[in-house]
Each structure stands twice: as structure tokens, then as C-alpha cells.
Length: 374
Image (tube, rainbow, N blue to C red; front, side, top):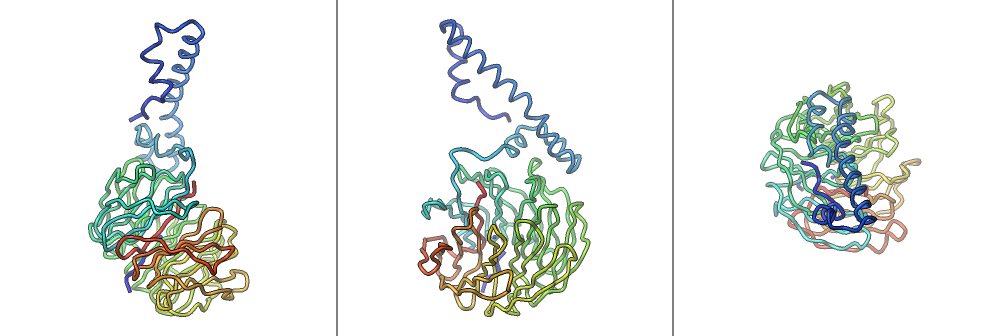
């Protein structure tokens, strides 16, 4: 079983038309064109100041980069028309498969780095981040073009790439270095390195910016504060791998692959408050938007295990492909997507009718998966 990780913008069309025809337009059209052009200039002039305000609270390096056009683009809202997209990292084919979530349709694959494992989606939906375990890098992938727009060197064997809730940074779990690299999104470089436990595997973040990191080799979870300091170490089960948090951030769920269990951590106390027996070898997991349902990939029994969070009881076991790894839930909670490493497929489960899953092709050995929020 493999390890899982889960410049100013060009002028608008109206501005381009105005540039070439301003002097020759009739009075009313010329005034409208002039107004549109002035409005565009005001928007462009305001972008650096607004971006600077967003990142000044993070650190001085991010604040300096806020004056660049790259940050202005990364701070922008979602593109329209809105399309919810899923992205699966194909470890064996060095590629990233894309899917239209609403239609459950594959869109093709794009090359990334070597041995991609974990995938994280930016809060604005414009970028996904791919941890390339064999090339020690993170790829920034534009979700519209599905092309790599930046490649950032990180620590050895990164297995996860998770953006912070405000989108200003990306955290990578460096499996081979026992560290977490902190990437500034606007700077597109590592700005800090945080020591964690042995063989860090996956990362979950909560709304206040705290991060939880599974340490596969030390059977623990390291808690990293928003100030980028390790502030707690929580003992969990054997070989902790996948991890997720409720949307409100009160609970964190850890898949203990070697124990056949899921540890439930209270973020208020940073203590394990429950252990859920799910059986087999759980790897990736994800929580529903309501926070009431947990979905766990059982890589041994080739199943998606559906758990009621309130009672801790298993509600259903849905057959999927071979050696399921990553799990992601659509923003409205209507679909669960599972990567099947052993069958080179992705299974899509309708939560209203879980007994009739859809199987889609993927690249070779898909592992991590992420769905854009917009």
C-alpha cells in the first residue's frame, strides 16, 4: 500500500476596445468608453493597497510581495462562470487529473512534478497545490488552464500541500525531513520550516489558522500555531496518515492505518476524546460540510466507510476501487470522491444514493484528491 498524503491582469475586453477607438467615437459612446477606462484604472490602482492590507498581518515578506501583481491575482475572488473541479494526483504517472464535479466528467490530465501525492485547493478556487514527493517540490496549478504556474522547492519527500484558511500560505508535510515547509503564496517560496514528528504525512487546518500534522513514524499529531510554532504533540494510533477537520474547526479526525481506527481530537483541549473502530487500514478521510458525517477510505477492504460523527457508529460501507487512498467531499456535500490507487480510477458517490457509485478513469496510482470550493 502506498502512502497518501488530499503583473496586473490584462485589460478587459471593454478596455481593449476602448483603447483603439476613443478619439473617433460619437459623444455618448466616447463618454461611456472614457468612464469604463477610468474605472479600470481606479481598480488597478487599488489592487496593491487592498492586497497589502490582507497580508500585512501575516509577515513582512508577504506584505512586501503584496505590492506585486502576482499577489493581486491570488487574492482575487473565484473566476466566473463558477465550475467546481476535482483534482487527483497520479503518483505513478507524474500527472494531475482534473474533473468537472457537477457533471462527474473527466477533463484530462496535466503534467506536474515527479511522484505527486497530496493536493490542496486554494480557498478562492483559482489554484491547487500539488506535493511532488520524488522531486521535493510543490507545483502551483492554475485551475482554469490546468497548467503549472510555479514550482517551489521544499523539504525532502513532501506528501501533503495544504493552504491556510486565508490562502496566504501553503503548508507541506516533508515525509523525508521530519519538517513542515511554510510557503508564502505571493512570494512563491518557503519562508519558514517547522520541526514536527517522524515521517509527517498529512495536514489539516482549522479556521483560526492552527494546523494539525500526522506523524506516520511516531504515532502522533503535531499541532502548529498560527505563529508557526509547534505547540502540542498528541498521541494517536499506529501509522497515522489521513487527517481532516470539521468546517467549524472543533474536531479533527485522524486515520490510524495500522490500528484500523480513527482518533477524534478536540481542538479546544488538543486531546483525543474518542476512538472510532472503522476496521481495515484507513487512509484518507474527509468530513461533510455539516460536520455530521465522516468518510474514510479503507485501503484493505476496498471500501468507503461512512461514519456518523455524533454516535461514532458506522452507517455504511460502500465498495469502491482497489486500494482507495484519498477522499474529498463536494462543497454542498452531495458527492464524495475517492481515489483508487490499485485500479487507476476515481469513484464518485452520490450521498443521497450511495449504493450507485460512478467510476471514472484516472492516471496511474492516484492518491491525494482535492475539490475546489468555488
